[in-house]
Image (cartoon, rainbow over all chains, first blue to last red):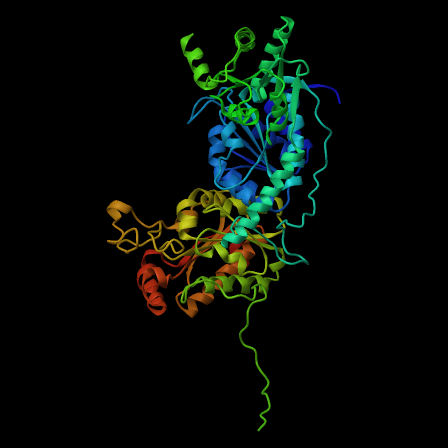
Length: 369
Length: 259
């Protein structure tokens, strides 16, 4: 297909349609409202379901209901709205029904602002809702990647009866880039053996997240955990750049990873042997590749648009073998490539130390400028 | 000595839409009556196979154990949103929620009002017993002025805790609502009228005539702290004046079904 110019939000919306999205439920919130607007026009003209809910709480519960029928469903929101969805997300996880979500992250906490941020990493990856569950979380760094991951999300959600959440940020959502859209796939509602759709000619089914008898809850939690282990084994995705002969490695996801690539390229032109690892699946996290890198590189630099949330996961993989440094911008500010380039130069010149707390050192550098 | 068995004349049996289990409800609780009325209506209309129930959080959280039909279990108060999601992708199915007063009139106020406002083609059976049952008898949004509960031990003080919410009266103002009525389960006559209303509510949905809700005034002997018999009397004497029975909204198209 020919390349077309698409805004990130509209591109994700259209990609979901092409992937066979059957029902969408959402609520307006900046910077993702164009997804809702695009679908409000396209879904009815295709004879599919679109409902603007009264709140994100209602939207996620509409998604929950539609998902129980086996339909391909999605909701999208931005940080404060995703917080409101957390109750429903936990119920969906506990009921083991496939749901696709998008969080176009903005500055926070609280009402924050509407500028690009990665501050919801922990909420998406390490919990958010209550209880023992692990969602799949994917982080695009371009509009094209957002499209490709959107399509993949539906397949992953259904394969593992899991939540699959895309965490983009305001810049991915609002930026226009030339992209290639996938072919239109027909809407196919699969005949799942768990779907609640009326007990016509079969035994009744119930879908619920309640197991009042603790041993049954434990069995359900073990089943979910086993599925998570399969996801960890099969679905780790990342992009690597200049890693072959890298002395040290930058780790960054989404927009931060993309900006870091510009800095890495500039550093390479200066002869600095730095590489980049960009996790595409932040859950499951690419622990193994970082573990392997830690045995042959001298240090890591984690770059994020938060105070070091993924940093903790990188440290877990590195296991203290080499220094892990940190650079972050906060509150809706995207780092410039030259800021990361300066960090690369600093690390190339002065040998990083294992004894330094990366967050404390970064904070000191940030505030003493 | 041998006696010949006399031919039996079956006058009462479990509805086909019920499963063969005993319920967890307390003695004298009217949930069992409400469940049975729904099951009888599903049987009589022949729609059990294509009906999907949405259970609430509260005493009737286990409703799905008692109906022999497809069921989902919603988060507290969210049943109308969940039912919306189901009904929108399966418009030829019959979808109903079963909700108590804490679920529907407190934590789920936004969901019920907006489902009615959108005219969602779903049926809501609303059990109003003026108290939180499952958590052990706390004040509900429908608790009567002066009524003692474990969280209003001196009786509901309207100066501090406000007034009971009247859901039928509120929802009847919405254009999307097709059929909104209040009935009671305190005696056989009223139970028969309640069943008729449930039938009309499901007929409203089957015909695509908009949102339908039947509020059923109910008892909670355990948390009211009186006997089942006293509870029926208490409902009649104290709840009926605050929550008058009646038809709060019957749209012109729904009125035609009844005729």
